[in-house]
Length: 273
Image 1 (cartoon, rainbow, N blue to C red):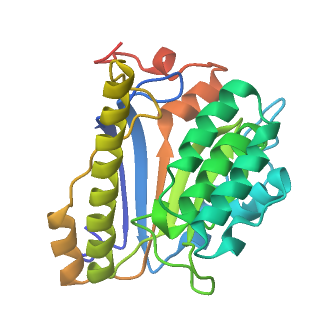
Image 2: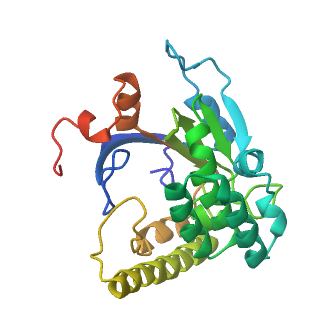
């Protein structure tokens, strides 16, 4: 619709994704998405900051803003992006930093870091294992690596990262936004690269489970395949203005407002239980 000339668009609806289930994730969920032409992720941050009369959470704007790299550096002491293309060095340093975690968390995190295909993925794995649980107050986490942000525009002044943010509250992601990538050639390259990467990850996971004799079970960590959205690429080829996009997980907002620990308890009529 943005391509067709509608400069401000929003949609509230139910979504189903073929992913695993946990207390924080459900294949069926409610989301609101909005898109504003001639905007970027800075405009989306201003749009996301809302007032709320919380008891323990401070919703006074502006929310804290910090880059993913800086937050990881605070917790681990590592400047992961400083390793450049030295993937082996980044993995070695990351695994050493993970030793401070509890055994269960450390085991899973080390496995993910060891199989990470890029330095950007290493940064993301450190963020998820060492930083997410510390983000209690509303925090905009900025500048995600390009490798994990296939739809986001490259940062206008920093290499290797994108103009993207995620809003974390109570150690959970509640919103995801970025300056939309509008270059159809770059978008096609990223989609195809992601498809190859995900397929390899799925095959590796299946082979690992088969070798261990375990059944393949779906959870947050289970890789899944993706397909190239050629219709989306065709739309971009017609021409899309500079656009900022924002998605808010309504179910997680309800979890927050109702003090509920599980997403399953806030979905009124779930198709999956």
